Amino acid sequence: MISQNFKVFAVEDDPIFSRMLRYLLELDPENEVQIFNKGSEMLNFLHEKPSLVTIDYSLPDTNGADLLKKIKAENPDIPVIVISGQEDITTAVQLLKLGAFDYICKDTELKDRLLNTLRHAKRNESLVTQIELLKEEVSRKYDFEKSIIGQSVAIRRIFSLLEKATGTNITVSITGETGSGKEVVAKAVHYNSQRKSKPFVAVNVAAIPEDLLESELFGYEKGAFTGAVSRRIGKFEEANTGTIFLDEIGEMPLHLQAKILRVLQEREVVRIGGNASVKIDVRVIVATHRNLAEEVKSGNFRQDLYYRLLGLPIHLPPLRDRDNDILILAKHFLDSFTKENKMGAVKISVEAAAKLKKYTYPGNVRELKAVIELASVMSSDGIIEESDIIFDETSANEELLNTEMTLDDYTYRIIRHYLQKYDDNVIQVASKLNIGKSTIYRYLKQMEALGI
Amino acid sequence: MITTTLNNRGSMNLTDLTFLRQYSGNDEPFVLEMVSMFVKRTTLEIPELLRATQSANWPAVKSAVHKLKSTINFMGITCIKDKIQLCEDLALEGKDGPYITELVGEIADTCMQAAVELEEQVLH
Image (cartoon, rainbow over all chains, first blue to last red):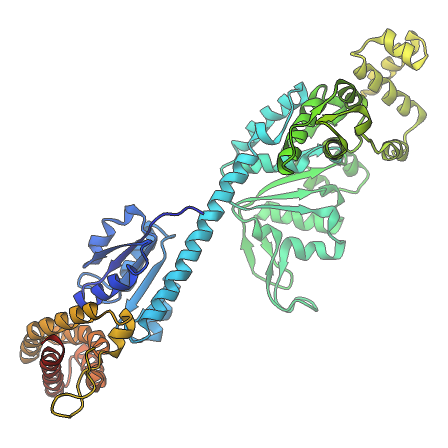
């Protein structure tokens, strides 16, 4: 927490009361008190951003309500306490509606009420400061270069697309295999855009049961269904003025796709059980591991929604296609893990690095992170050896076998993998697979014809 | 320690400094400072209030009694609390001049007596 003076401006024309106010406020040495006799005098100093303003309701040049409006118009974040000789509920309610932080009467309860309100105001200020600091920290964390690690051609292309995405409000659709970093990219877009200080709301469509998804997204009114004991806003409203990230959008049930389309077209939501529509200003980022174009063809995804969401497509390559990024990422995860766990420096041996590069990572970056974290725990003497690198080979094999491809497709995949691994050296690949060069060329021709 | 419950003639005081003492945590120099300010202000402002009443300047009367309202709370002059509120309400409406004049007279007398009492018992 930052320790600094709590600057209080007090507008009070009564010399007795202003002395009493100063006395009480200055009991806390953290408070720096400045008294003004007129509202207009205080307004001239409002640019100094006081932490709190107290105003007398009856002033020689204005009244509390007008002065409050002027302060709020110039800086809505400054808490304003109205102190009045009048015990008038109507006035108090009116002032609180105008944004007063509190309304206090000049009576014998004054001391306790004022100190209590001051405590609340300080706690609020501290929370606001902490939120701002956290926002800055998050923003720094999602700086492109810090959050998306790698130097491969594929990643450099992603950087250039991200720059285009952050300059506008265009919808971004991110595709890529599981674990390839779709949410990291979505956050990088948000935290580098003009909406960075506004909410980023992530919804994993696949993780929410189908019958709850609608209420999660659109919210509901009290009594909309059994258990709706009070109004609740949905994720779209929560993300208002910020960004909503709909992860695994391909899993969205068809009947909700129509509702999403309406929200995107009309820029408004209607809560379940409600009649009124609520205007929203939300940037949409979607992600999926599916091929949405294929899903449209097979009737699982609405074509109109597909085109509405396509926006700027960003495809994240699987880790196995990212050349030397594997080692760059491994080093990054290793440094972060050792730092977080207050471990000494740990290095990766040449043999371990070679093993890391050979693997295909069906779980992509997420899997590499887990492998490195385990390896750093298993390592001794500050060096990760080959034996410390433990892959979940069964999951890799299962993933490959569960993909259900034709034998030719499996063959294409194997050949492509080996060609990437051996820098397109056909002779070396033919030798490794124990087949002839001409067989490889024949498959390459077939792949080219199929556009693979 | 200053006592304000009974005066030297044995009758009840108009003022009660309990609130000021509680407010300041028995900071006597502060209590004296506030009492001194009250005495000084009363001797200056009560004649102004009377002049405003004589000239039927009800907004000025309203403003003056409004300021007195919080001050008399702090000085514990509770006997005129309701009269001040009534006087403020009537002055705001600007009617029933004779009654306002009567109320102002009572308020002025009490404040002046309170000032004398504080000067005698606290400041001297």
